[in-house]
Length: 125
Image (cartoon, rainbow, N blue to C red):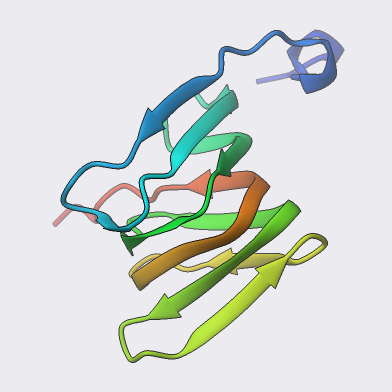
C-alpha cells in the first residue's frame, strides 16, 4: 500500500480539540489537578496515539498498559515505581515508560509534554 505526501499528518496546521478533565477518584492521591490532552493523531487501529498533555500540580496512581514516549516541554514531575524508587523529570527530558509500569505520577510544577503511545493488542492463543 503506497502512501503519499497527502497522507502525512502535519500537526502545526491542524486544529485539534483540547479535552480538559479532572482525575478519576480511584486514581487521585493529592491535589485536584486539572489536566488536558490534545490528541493530534490516532491510528486507524487505535493502538498508536500522539499529542500534547498537561497538568497542574497533584499526584495520582498510574498503571501503564501501553508504551509511552514522553518529551517534557515545561515544568517538572516525579515518577515513582511500586518499590518506592523515583525519577524526577523536567523540561528537556525525553524517556519511555514501559508497559506494566505501576506507581505514581506527581506533577511538582505545571507540566506539559509531548506523548507518543503504543498499546499492544493482547496476544492471541
